[in-house]
Image 1 (tube, rainbow, N blue to C red):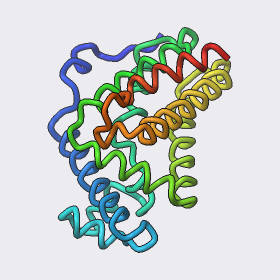
Image 2: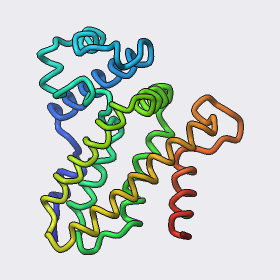
Image 3: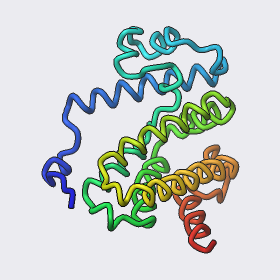
Image 4: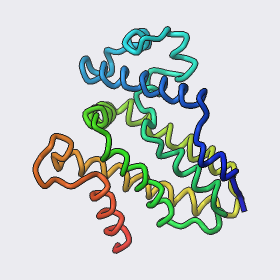
Length: 205
């Protein structure tokens, strides 16, 4: 069974890691904001770096391409799944565990006052076939990296489980945004409410 140091988990990331995460978020926000203003095809790495207040050289320390900055996992869904597998024996992981990991992240989305950035990111990615492909490739790469740490006998099941969970997550953001909730429509569901409902529907299939 895999374990992590519990004291490290409680302390969370160190100062250097927090600074790295903050810089990644700032670059991602700059990229998404510019893409929303101009269209992704009219945004360059130099544009993003200038808006984020960093050099192009610094940009490439964090992101390999412009597209990777646009499809960055700003909420940490990947981290949540990786932390779950670090705590649990892969043989014991079930869909409900992935649902709980994603749900904990979605609760943070609901609490974020800057919901516009999330909507912009979704709309930017879904309006561009190139970015949709980049997002899919990034998800697959992260999954492959995780699977490399898991016994071969469990990989097929876990790959399938994560693919289903990712599809539900994408459907959740689609329904949440289409409901008008991010713009303050009265009685619109939270993103976590949408997610829980879709997870329940999946179990009923």
